[in-house]
Length: 524
Image 1 (tube, helix red, strand yellow):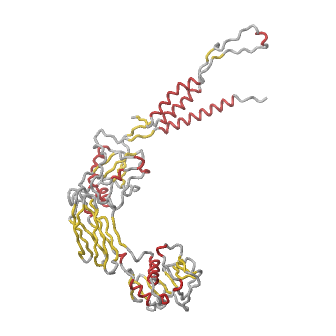
Image 2: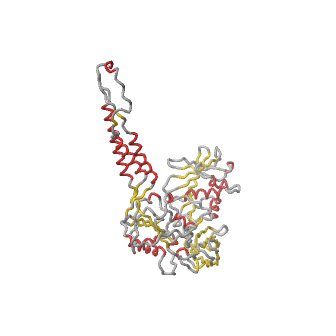
Image 3: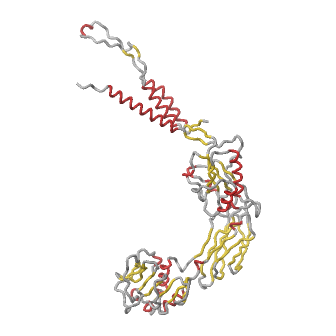
């Protein structure tokens, strides 16, 4: 069936009679050549209407054809093509893993794909391409049993978004399998909408865990503070029991009541462990968001091999640091070393080296931090209390973190292994009480490990909408396929007309060039 994208351009065809009228021929009077006009003085001149009317210039047909082709091409002729290719977009958000009929029942994703497959079997399209909204650029396998199992296994691992415009070609039909729980997935670019939505009806009740985080307790390094966030993604108020455990067993529990669409926070202080697990009881249709596991490796104190020759103020600062654990110089394994010249170690791992090979003396200029360091990382230093006990000539690839004029005070050596060297005399700075020593120690080890140490947070979280299971705004769903249904798409047929118009234009240009050649003045 023929249709038009911009049918008003067809009104240009009314100009074709005008083109013919503009090319009409006038009356042509006969011309007679004579030797002298004086012989014809008695003759009366013929009127302008005398003579025979000539036919229109044949060029009007060519120009009218050009105008007609352009008008029809601009009107956008479209032909419906049957048995078109179909892209099946699959909403693989976490809510599509819900089992609304109870544990062991079919997932929403599997039910939706079964509905889509039944409709596709009736239509028999030319090609079926399956893509997911979390990874749209990757083509998936056919929506058979194996393909459904693979899609179900990956659901909830990524963050689904609306399909990119580049994959929404007009030469294909685009179907969407979804539960309608995330309206943003229907906001397709450029005002596009799915040609068909296969909506999976499901339950409307669910409470899930959105975030589990932990940090060191401020007053006790052997305990951690835990924050758990719950979200009610259903449509009615719910109550759940929150259970917090570790490898040692249950740590704490609490009862939480949440209104529909609301969130709640639970705070605990528990002993330090290697891993935390949070779980909601009783379970619901979406079991995958009822639990979260959090490894606590980022909160583990880093073992630092300590040189016994280090100043006592430096050792005290290391022992008081909540993220560092001082161990003997020959202990193993260790994460780094604090060497003040007495370990006699070769370069075998990360280390902070405190150099001292001369009498301490005051720097000649005021200290200044590297401009690459954030202001929050810089330590305020009193120049009158600083003393240096060595020279640290920078080498190619090194980074000077702290300098006093041309003299480097703290240098990050190019690795591997990564090394931080300093010439500061911490024993002299300890003579007057101040916070410089622990702050400088923390800064050097943060530069060594390239992570913040004082306020480390272990965190695992889901999207704020991951627990939503109820359709927020049910989309318009196409009627089930029937034997007379068509998978036709409208294909633009204006391109052949534009090529034909180009050929006619070239024909016109050639005809005008030929006419100009014939009418050129002859050489004298």
